[in-house]
Image 1 (tube, rainbow, N blue to C red):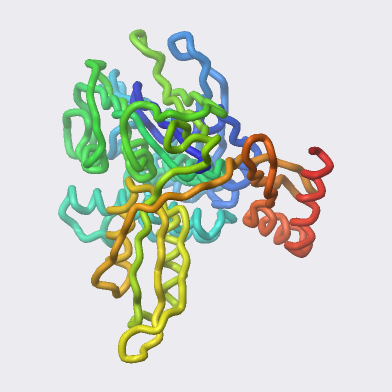
Image 2 (cartoon, rainbow, N blue to C red):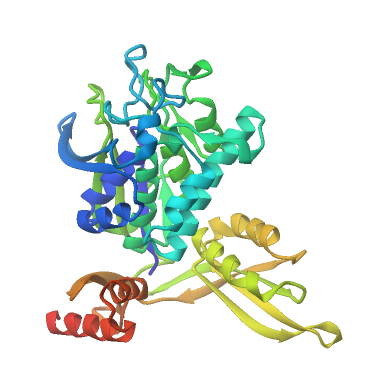
Length: 428
């Protein structure tokens, strides 16, 4: 079954809160540090357990190393965006370290950092797409071309760490299906470089288009630009928690300790259940999207496939076909949750030369799936275990994990795969 994540934003959402929730739910801290360290920016990731209104949660704080990151020495005195601490606005959401130098980077600089990291190719593309999305929102708000946009708060070091860290977390958990609650945005006003604005601030509100929001009267900013970006980019639907078997839960803490409610974001990881998608029956339905293409460079199919996966596709495959007038072509087939259909169709139109797609709802049966982590020389490998009714049918190491260890140790990928399987069978 597809692994499901439920994001409960009853007290808002911020990048550091989501990252803390993933750590609380079991994301290995050392694996996260290794991925973030490969960005090559001077930072210190401080992970602590705190209590918010009586509830234990994980708090993540990013501090800059000025000597290691040249941008830190160029920090501005005033934050441009919305979630930096401000003594003038005591109700403002404090998601950033008070010691942080507000260094702002361009899209090109951020893409360069991500491109030279050791994230997987899919994670790199996903992270860059997220920053492009916030850049497009900024460009629209200020009526300037995208290439002239400087990402202010979301281009600062801690926001880069939060966004890239969350991308890594989604990939590590192997999440296929994301549902979010309506988001509590808070209230009051917030001070940004252009003056005093109502909450949600302009860029945040633009990123929340299509997302159900509300305010319960708390006079502070509860949803930050980074939080709005991540939730709206990953969530395929919004509403109450779906019927699911809970596997892990996690709570990520904001900086403030509110009196009326815990200032935390909750994530729930599990597998969908219910009559139509029960683990016993192993069945559910998905949408199948198809189109044939005979006038596009073959080089473009790879990037298109990666972007489809990054935007919610469950499977993408290409089939050689013969089209009218004897021309060779390619049949593109995408399987996805119904909630992702519009996004994926728009992507196909934008990224390919097709002028039409067709889709239909199809039934399917799947095995129950879970991930088990094993140790091999050089690191940890996730093992995907698939079965039904307690019987295991398939066991497979995650290829990206094996590739990462093979590249780091100089061993063949197939040797790492064999070691991972041996470690799993020995443990089992």
